[in-house]
Image (cartoon, rainbow, N blue to C red; front, top):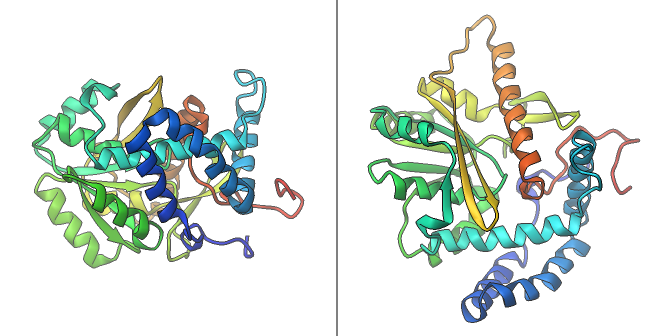
Length: 313
């Protein structure tokens, strides 16, 4: 994959202006007209972003092969793009305070109760499946819980700046990072000790490159999955949760799972145990991808690419 761009280097040119225009149209005309305008906008991106299009086709084909019995026909890559546009609007609406309590369904009341009753903070590992900004709903549901979302500066700078401008009130704080340095880990350790929860994505390879990945089985093929979230959880010695936020029947469903009370990696078997933790996460991500196949928004080459196995070549 040497000739492939890393996800953090993919240009966002024009996307900020496009988001502003779409948000204006939504405010003026509502979601029905927004969807009409979204069609040509996403058609433009579908035609001009060949790497994203091929990555989408690759993902959907692998997904189809993994659950062919329940999915008789492959899903449309263009439909994948349209779903992304819809969720992008919802991300902005979260920050504008326009996602109501009745728009959110908590599917894991026991896990939510455990989160609420715990005197200790922890790590919540999310993904680019669905709408991670909905995690702010936890702050509404449990007002005593503080949440910090880690975002990668190189990738999210423009989108984050727009969210900050449209936000009437921040229910979660954001910390922009490039990599988890020892200094960052110390800051996060203090926050967890104070009962705060750190939200970090577990399905994007490190911005700085390097080898902090595990080779996992994901949708029938080997793929590099980042270790960062689990290395961090091991350092912080705190509970680890997985959270997935899927839009189903016009409402967001939050699935929260306790992944481990504490991740501990023995020095002698650290590499193997870390790989096992990452594989467990990949297994859960795959299961939820099958629940909402068009809502995993990793529009870049994700699997190990072989010369004879390039989708859309």
